[in-house]
Amino acid sequence: MNSNDIVFDTHAISDFVGEHEVKALEAQVLAAHEKLHRYEGPGREYLGWLGWPLHCGREEVEQIIRVARQVREKAEVFVVIGIGGSYLGARSALDLLGHSLYNQLPKEKRGGPQIYFAGCNLSATYLTHLWELIGEKELVINVISKSGTTLEPALAFRFFRTMLEQRYGKIGARERIIATTGETGALRQLARQEGYETFTVPGDIGGRYSVLTAVGLLPVAVAGIDINAIMAGARHGCKLYDEDRPPNNPAYRYAALRQLLYRKGKIIELLATYEPSFLYFTEWWKQLFGESEGKDQKGIYPAGVNFTTDLHSLGQFIQDGYRNLFVTTLWLDKPPVDRDIPLLTEDMDGLNFLAHKTMHYVNGKACAGTIMAHSAGGVPNLKIIIPEMTPRYYGQLVYFFEKACAISGYLLGVNPFDQPGVEAYKNNMFALLRE
Image (spheres, rainbow, N blue to C red):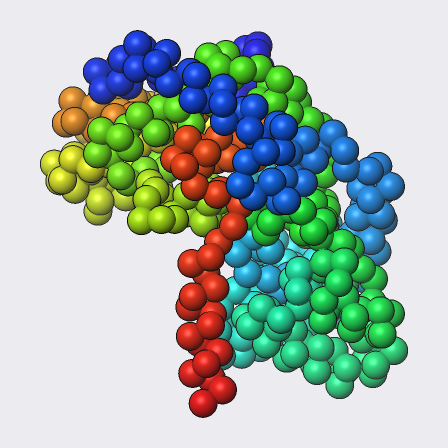
């Protein structure tokens, strides 16, 4: 690793976990590594994401870029229909790599269509308000579902497909529907029948690990973000997090420390961020770890906080509440923009001592002070430092967490690649609906 890589900082953890404990876990981490890379562990049929950035064909990326360019030229609004891993990765990238108020920008500044998401809830209110917002604008949709039968996106697709066919006719609608789906299934069959532009979700990659496939890359490319750079960063992540073994692999060290803290009763992990643009990255992270580890009455509960906002709500509990949690801070070293604090002649708020310093400087001190306070209050703190938020670092960060999650799941003794608990609510829901 070099100074230009993402850094995993553990200096604030020494009072809670000793280096001898990390060393004692090395054999288990190595065993998890071998199990993963030899395709011998549970869930091995879903390891297509492992090394995917190295194996993903250039032709597929070029097709994504070509289709995205067509959408950018044709559409005023692009609606992504999907739930869980079918939309969280893309939305996280759009927020982190784009303008904070992208959809509110004039088109000449956006350079592409407004991008909205549907099929991620069952709210008629949300769907109706989205339709009202779209109005008569030129519309293209991307329906993302491996099977085509997941309830939320399937229902949303029914509505949007009907809207497009009523507005443009069946032939016109075909040109405005893109299906990202499995190699078989209801949506694949419909796409063949209707002649939709289609991308394939690899059968051996689960939804929460699919952000670096067409699932995440197409919406990101429609926003004008460089997906080649994202994949280059992810390939660099493969080099860093696949080849090195403990203790030199930061992703493995993160996985090991999480498990050591869990064994000490720290059953909740808070992912803390200091930029609002990390909101949906946190949501993606929550799904990644929640679906991967929450099994067999085991697992670390993943939750997210946005500081400094949540220091004024949850901060009290984190500082003084029940000691069953730890914090992992995602820190962005260089934000996309920064602002100098102005000098006021009257100094009514008493903050002139900060004049000419930057907002990011203040944010950095807030981060450092919070870690100090929480550590002193009995809350272990880990920190992941991202030099700046570029497509390359985004790709590296995604692969860091994917690899860490897989190793952490094996250390926990669960299958990190299935989600049997999700099926329980679905079975009950459909039974009630059929009544």
